[in-house]
Image 1: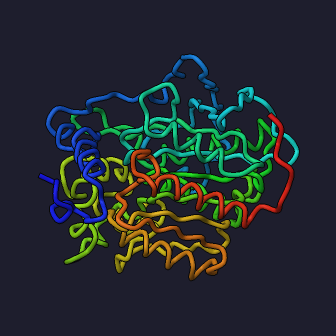
Image 2: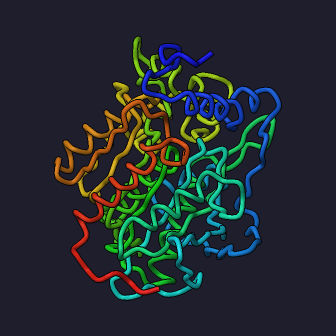
Length: 387
């Protein structure tokens, strides 16, 4: 079927890449099989730490005292509390760092927020997971980084299951993870980089926005919210949960043949979008909320400023359906932060979230080389940390 290159979604794709991506599109929890029978694989979740050889799981304590303002009101409306959640440490290769080791002088760390449309994915390393490799590779991108902490935030559900954990549940969990690094392990915010892919990148932006807005609100000056992180690594960010980029001849339709994701108005995507934005309203809230759709171009969208945001890395695949919204995000960030503070890496003919697809070479490895280049450009030269 795909033997001639002209029959493939992109002529640059090998036959092997094409077949693997098509197979992957069938089994993902947003794919056609999940639409018919439900999730094929049930991921670990926030209720327990997965055990296994080499697993470094820790319980992250709740931080209800840090949940304030608009986010607190939404949480109260949805009966969402700050709870303890698992976090999993991932070492760079050939390193073995104790799980609760306090920050060492000059040590930088990645906090990783996995993707999965807020309905799937896991931070656990001992599970057949696409995200374990991401956490390990990010921890290997600079000599001052030996480890990353992946946060097992709560995933959203809705009918026929219970209506549970819409926004801001995941944000509250990400906040607890960040506070754990700062207050429990002693990492200075200037030594933390938050990395997220797809929905996780959306969450990384929301957390940074929450930190900045809370710290700048005069009525909340007594709330001990940490400063924002040193940097953000936003990998194929899903930054418009509404329909503002659904336009004729846009990437949401034109790139469907070259991506493994299904239409965003299909059954599983709509399930994810509607349930995550349940308290904000769907579709009105998902079209306009700065918290979950910071790249929205809807005429009624809330202002989503990026002033004060840390230096950021954006990666995207030119063949992914979110191409247009990611380019909108890039324009907004450059306008507010300056071009020198936004490092952009576009991968020709790559699909969505290709940085979790280790078979998508050479773009997969080249993207982590780009992260390393970005970090080398913003972190002053220092001696590598010891093991």
